[in-house]
Amino acid sequence: MTQTPAHKFIAAIVIVAAPFAMGAFFLTWGPSHQYELSNPVKDGYVQPRDIATMVDKTLRSTVTVYCDAPKKESLGSAWAVTLDEDAYAEYDSVFITNYHVVDDCIGKEKYLKIARLYAKAIPAKIITLDKKNDLAVIVADIRIPTLKLSENLPYPGYWTMVAGSADGYEGSIAFGSVLNMNDKQVLITANASHGNSGGPVIDNEGRVIGTLTSGSTKEQYNVATSLDAMCAKIISCDGKFYWDE
Image (cartoon, rainbow, N blue to C red; front, side, top):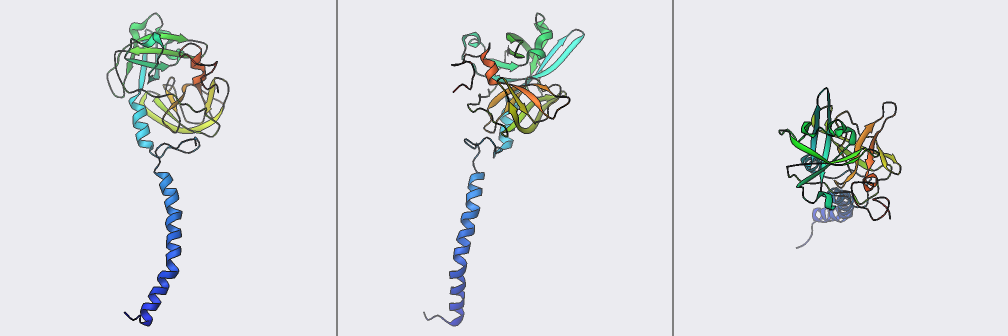
């Protein structure tokens, strides 16, 4: 077919526009392809691509802890985990929380209970206590999904999420980052309140880096007891610390 001047003009536009279109495609494909990743690997600084799913999974593994001892009631959180140590082998569910959440129920365990999100509270039992590191292991006749421990040492700036029962509001979630850390603590910027104590602090792959322990009334950060501290009495570690290389 013989090209008319109009056809030649259209062909010229296509030839000129094609490289720009291809360039725009590759520029947009790169970031959009990265956005499809649900668990960014080896980049703790970025937020997860599917936050909704991560929140849902974390809350399914987080419980509220009640120590309703006479004249001294306390409220906290705990997270379910699978531990290979013999001390926990006979239990369906093992939960990590703070010592200070359950200490008023030591010797008074009939007042200790846990509850899944918006569910009825059931009796719980204390198995391991670590007062020095403010940690405790409790068990209950319940089976729920467990959270995994992070294999990555959290660095300043890493994305974090806190789950628990902030001020008694079950299913509370807050986002932040790692401010810094020391040998057994992770300082985080995510908001936390009374009731968050014992709840999990999660990295961007949905794994636990620590247990929320306390807040600062003067500084703009909260404190989580890191996995390194669990090596003292709760889990068996190859070295002195969980993240020993």
